[in-house]
Image (cartoon, rainbow, N blue to C red; front, side):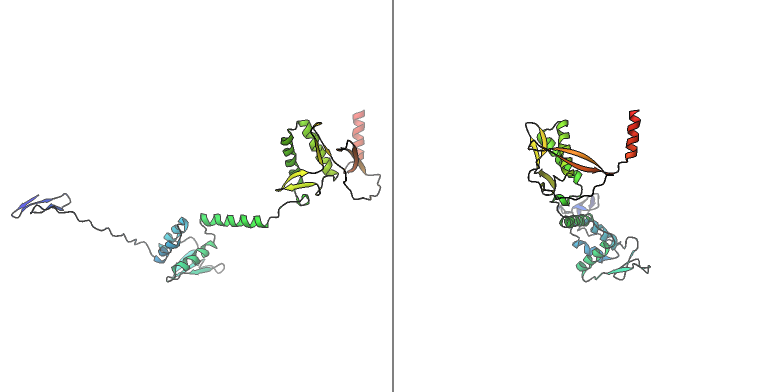
Length: 274
């Protein structure tokens, strides 16, 4: 408070006059806050590029560093040109920055850094999606038994499906497994009767399920086999398999047993005998 010949003047703690000598209330003036000028910005052209980042934090952060002349290892910016490995004779490359064409310069800058492995998370995901789409287009759809590579896996998946479908016991599942193995080994089950849908075996047409006996069998009716001519060889050993068919008949076929050493087998037999 100041008392003089003109009257009483009231000040606030900051030194501003609250009441004049005439008793008028003096409103404090609001000063417009000026934007702080970032004195660290050396390359303002990179700061201008931020408006074309489309809210990509990766490139926004990168451009902020570039504007302060902070570049990754092996990169340098001089006279409107970003250099990569400027001192190396091999693998040297550069990217020009046109200060009059900021948007196109930013696109060129992004492609330049992307070619050196600098990608945002958004761009990495876009690349992964693109690769997956291309692989999906190129991958051939497995719709035929001949084109199946891992046949055992497909058969196991089908057997487990039938096990759940018919609620098979262990004994019934063993019957299914042996029937399918015999059918595959004898070529009763082949590409003509093994049906695939959505890259899974949906049906084996001549595999028969008897719900009363709860047994699987093979329907061999109208199945034609190519006639094979083989030379007789007494040194070969064959084992026989009996197939129970759906017509209450049985079929016997023979398959050669490979890599059996008769001498060892006979010696083992003698050891067990005596």
